[in-house]
Length: 315
Image (cartoon, rainbow, N blue to C red; front, side):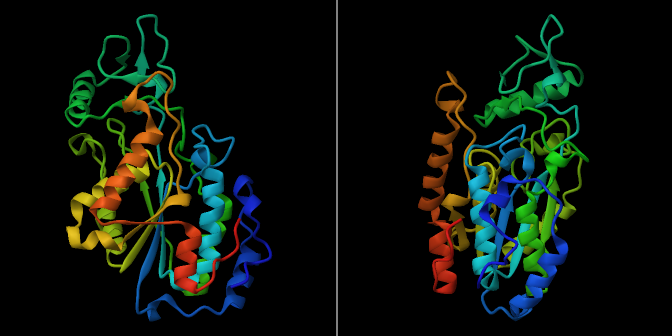
């Protein structure tokens, strides 16, 4: 289809209120068939496409995420008539989380700086819940994982946790044009465990939130014949979500997962951190493993051409 006149790829770097009137009018003009009529059901799962990660002024901006978001929004307009469902996840954090700077203090009372790595209590100690935190660090070690201190991001009720407006508009457009609601899942409110994956926290035993909503979301995603995956960040939340899918799906079902290579970017490596903190290298290593297990890798242009017979418009 011709992209709506209100949309420009540069919108992905802007913060504004959704242009709902223009979006609704364009959706009416698209005249797409309802999703319920799809014979082959496809879902686009976008992990955490939020301002804090995808906007250049975001507190945890992932370099490249703004361009990823523009391409994802373009994919929805170009190939949305072949996408049955859109699904978004979003981080939601309070102030006092185990990965927050002020949760930790050094002997002088100073908080841990962002991007610090904490393996024990030798430099920083938690301000509370020491026994639970010690257990958390031990569980991470067992699984060759680390605790990274992150800048404050996706704070509850704050604008940094909002979906990038250009992508929110694309979601509304698709919902109206295809008469099918966008699926949405919030994650990350448990204070004593990180929650990178959309489907499970790093240490489930330290989580208190209900898994009912997660189970329903996962069931809805997996009810589709093809699952396109994009979002932020390739090295953390996207990778962890795909790790979860690897564990939950039988080998013969992994072929339904399509990794959109140019719809995701990794967190940069932490200087001097060695291989464990070389996040881009670890992300690519994981993607190679996902493909070897049966998942498929495509660019957005290739996926658009396959679904529609055209290459779409490059953002």
